[in-house]
Length: 391
Ligand SMILES: [Zn+2]
Ligand SMILES: [Zn+2]
Image 1 (cartoon, helix red, strand yellow):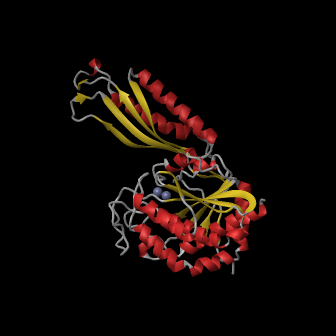
Image 2 (cartoon, protein in one colour):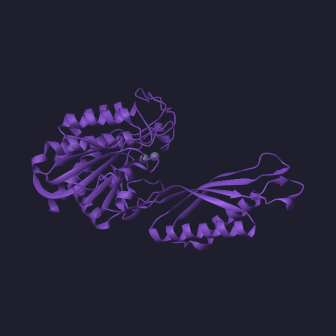
Image 3 (cartoon, helix red, strand yellow):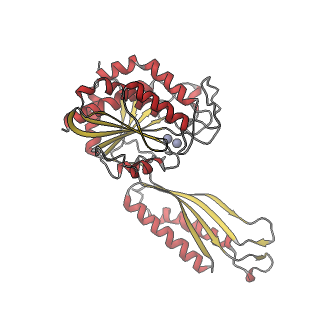
């Protein structure tokens, strides 16, 4: 059996314990004091020297005794602003919930760290561990990049992951090229002129403008995006007015645009601006456009991914590897993949009975913890072997 898989199986109980402890103390955004303290202590226990390079953002390195390159392994640690209703006995003790599975990511990376530290003398280069806050709001990875996570030592390759519920434990999804969608969240405030509903000519009706913008944005998808491309524009909020006989001053539209790849994203963002601007002009209104989020599509470097798949194959485990696992939820690991050749794996862990009925971000979601040793072993295996073969 593969050395890392064997060791990860031995560590399974410990990993489950760690995951349950993390699961019970979820925190959100970039304020993760309990989680950060917990992870820091675990890293010190392993024998590492974690540095908090931004608030609730930890970095630690393993190896560096033999010359070589640097590979980054990354986990996110934040939870969601929602109550947990899983009924698990280690459920959240805070007002937040680990319904995306970042507690599993953190545990997996701690497991990989422990195994790599045990083989530190054999590592030909450096493994850099990155534990980030603020993934759900797409702010953590960027903040850590700005704080220098990719420098000193300079990172040459990166590996990201997400647990998914598309299959049982042992199935691992991957995608060459654009893997997860970009996210452009926006808020459009249309400014008209309020007046009596019986005298519309005295005002400028922002609801009318909003309706035209709504339809025009949907037509960008149906009339300007090729059937071979993928894009979504969803307007999740359309808010205006209070009563039947008053034309309001403003109408607010909030939405999200998702796509894959740079070109189409830029094209649609430009066209959205044109459509909003010209529609407002047509109907004599003005507008304000606010960017709510701005994340590129996560790009998996095809050559690096193939190399990593080779190392997984060498493990000789009975994994089911699922290609073309492109997904729409995003991951701010995308900011790293924009700068460094990166690979990304989706570790499936759907519980195979009625408890597995709930999706991620649902208050009742549960994850199969058997994914923990597999995730840890794959991370360790890929990092160790990539360094060995890319001196
Ligand atoms: Zn999430
Ligand atoms: Zn997530």
